[in-house]
Length: 161
Image (tube, rainbow, N blue to C red; front, side):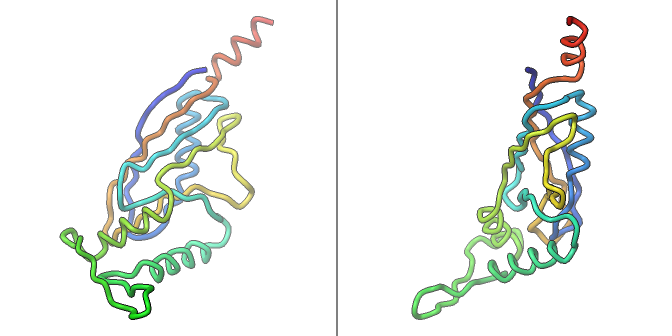
């Protein structure tokens, strides 16, 4: 078993989901890994990682609209009897900043996935997405930790038999 730590950078187009599955598979292959575990960690507090459907783009649109309705900008209505409007105290970086932190807290910043033959094991209609919660384009870094068998080690083991 071997392991590596690295970072992959992605430029987002602002709020929305970016399919990063192929980028991750290419990274595994370029790193010469055959099988193992891939651990991904977003190094930011206003974007997240998720696995979801990759066939119908309406799924991603619906997810985006749902999370926007769940976490509104500027303020939210309390769930108490008096339905008080509560304004965010953290707004120095823009009206999208505090809602982005809440969206990140409600989703994932870390994923652990198995891979085999240099490909992440996912269901037929699944993909891995970087979910940007801010309005403007951002450069995002994902920490990548791979633990597994390298291709060269597998071939060396076969040659010994």
